Image (tube, rainbow, N blue to C red):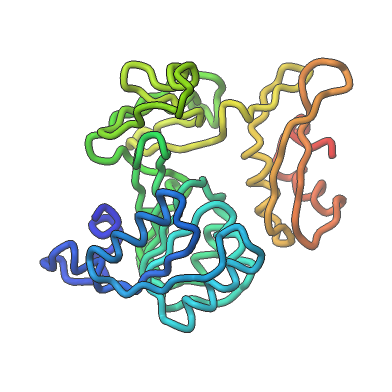
Length: 306
């Protein structure tokens, strides 16, 4: 219902019941049904009588995203949820998906360049972001872009404002990004988990007085939008004690046209303390090209060693 009320205001008349919004959409579902996303897509679509197209390949199997795009085009699918590397895989196909009306990114913060490429492939779709944890349910919802409306570039990377009955705070600060104090995102939601299975110590570490410590690093803008900038455990601390966010380097890498997917991790510095960043890249581009590209977007200390 949040998807419908937030993303579909221009798809059907506003006086229609919320269920009619959803039932009017042909939805792509995928397997395996072992996660909240897949289960939610299938049963909410079924509940409202939507037409459901089911992909045969599991999300982790090679060729899955190619099959999804083929099904979207062949069956005029109108609603699609992307998560993980699915968005990058679909962009890599380069195929147009004009039938899409609602595109939802969930479970991942998407860099702007990748999102803009995806928008070009689905020009008739509204785009939204859902920030959620298995431990909390939905935390925030964000309308990234409504079809045929001007693009709000300032908030394109946001994960949105708190969902109904959700409280948010930022614990920290742990570092500063563009003059904003970044800390750990902590949320109190209506339906938190009871605990991790047979692990009371791990539960007590993250769930304190009803507040879930997400492990994500972020900040809240002046207009109330939450931005995620990385993971608390992912911060790379250089031997110089400078802190590096892998996501900053990953976004800079992904902005190169020859890069399909990029990931950055820390590896132990030979000095015996701290770490250096190493980048793993999929694409048709040389290391020399990447270093020249990164030199225009990163500070020298952020440049990957390997």
